[in-house]
Image 1 (cartoon, rainbow, N blue to C red):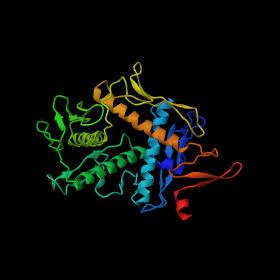
Image 2: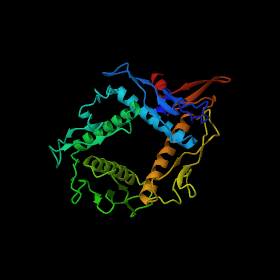
Image 3: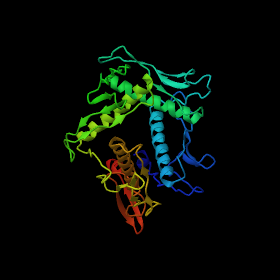
Image 4: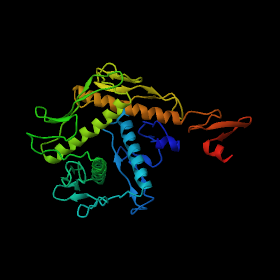
Length: 354
């Protein structure tokens, strides 16, 4: 939507010599084979500082390059939103003095990780401490920053849940772990949090959805992060169900036009041809591979493909040509012909002024 508002959408060029993101502030770094966000903070305590997170595709395939580009676009959108609210802090990347710039988030030098330290204010666990850990993959500034952003997002969710009085810290004992959230239970056999949810509306009414969220290890921090992921997934499920849009999804079919299951590759693939803009006629085919063959992972990959297709279509519509042959994005806008080949674009704001 941010790209749509700015009219800056490009499908992206995948020739290594000429890759373009089509979005201001996002460039391809050939030396690192990655997309780089280059953004200067405009507001708040770090006004004037540069933010330059890196998004590296897993390989040189056009699908992976496109997925990395979309991740950079999403990060850029969040940065601009934080900046608009004056909440962006770049963080210090000196190992001796790392600062998150966000209350309740600190760097633990002994664990080389960001730690959330938050005391619950409301609900059944009022007064209990929540301390999830976010460890970067390596010591590079890019990985440290991505781990910091993950901690900030988790902190935001915690505060929102706390405000609604829905936070439960969970029991760290493997024998008695409780999620504190209806529809989410600990499956001892799978050593994972499982959602057990029956769809109430739409074409799959009555079907059960049971995705699992397995922690990386048995540490309280990892168990808690997996629980939070399950809570977030359940929230999305309930919202989709309320709108009657949930599809249980099996590898055949996806239930969504332009999305198909490729059996030999075991991936969901989007097959979409760009209709507008400089890349008109080009085929976009990003793929989404589940982590394993379980129905839960296949369904999560399908939902990711649906979301990516929605963004693609939004970007494409933003460049739909008007009668003058140039993009005319925005609802309520129209063209008034003046002379041959000359048009006046009138929008909602202009109409109100007239």
